[in-house]
Image 1 (cartoon, rainbow, N blue to C red):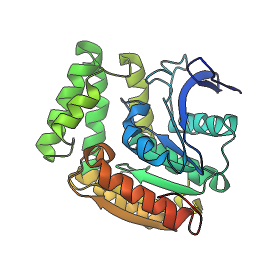
Image 2 (image 1 turned 45 degrees about the vertical axis):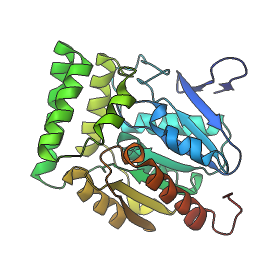
Image 3 (image 1 turned 30 degrees about the vertical axis):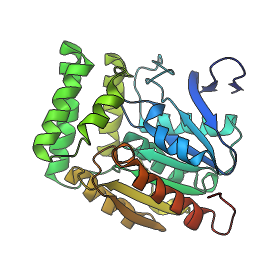
Image 4 (image 1 turned 120 degrees about the vertical axis):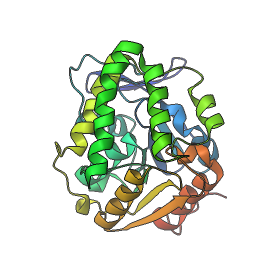
Length: 288
């Protein structure tokens, strides 16, 4: 595997896929993993704020953004985990903090459980774990499965608007600030219909228990953080995550929805900076 940059857009080869990434700043490394249906720009406020004291790395998951589709017939969370490991290895990042949101949080938690000595910290934002806690979870994931068909019929953008509307019926504010969401999605979807289907099946397979991993194996300190207006599913899973990971704390982002780092970026970034300085790099000079 290799990384290339220079005057070209930076890509790294990960398991047969050319993965787009961006690297900024200097200091202890933090790798950000975005969720499904978005791209690396999900983390723009945090990268902008933290590059003064940390080496920040964002990338587009296979199927998303500038990385784009891959010829693999089916995706799994484990495949995304191995992509992440290949990225960290190729960029020669020494024990980074891995920060994942939504599906990116699923990838991050499995990575930290599978390779506990390769991370120095773990941040799980607005995410879920590999179990269905009750009938409400079964309904929520059934809705995601059901989206695959209408996406093929009416296109990703219209089907996603319907999904946001349905989530708002269940829990008002869970999709985040409308202006923030509109601005973030103004550039159009970062995923094709076919890739969406593969990603959706990867997520539903994860919560159906297709993967065998143990959160008790995570040895790094962890921050489990989620928006105040999140769906009940995410709040319940945040409790399950913080209980299962040995050294975990849980924090609520006031006014935040499913993209709490974008809805309330100042609060989220301050919480992240505090976690990095006091729980991960305590005693080290991390900048102001």
